[in-house]
View: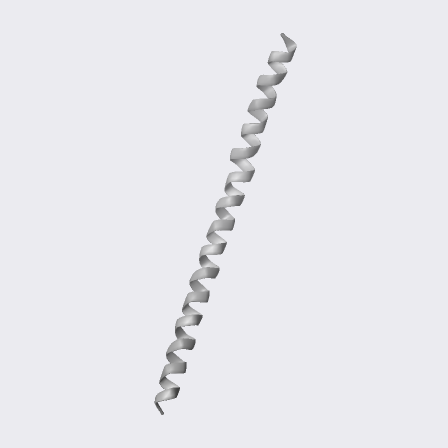
Length: 57
């Protein structure tokens, strides 16, 4: 009986850790990656536009 209780408590503790620490951390990393990607895209577009405009002169 105590093994079953400990198994249930361990499972609940594992789920608590996953949903309160691991999932928010992964969501934060995805947000950070999206922000870095958008900034990199804007820099790429700016460099491309400046490069094409300077070739015309």
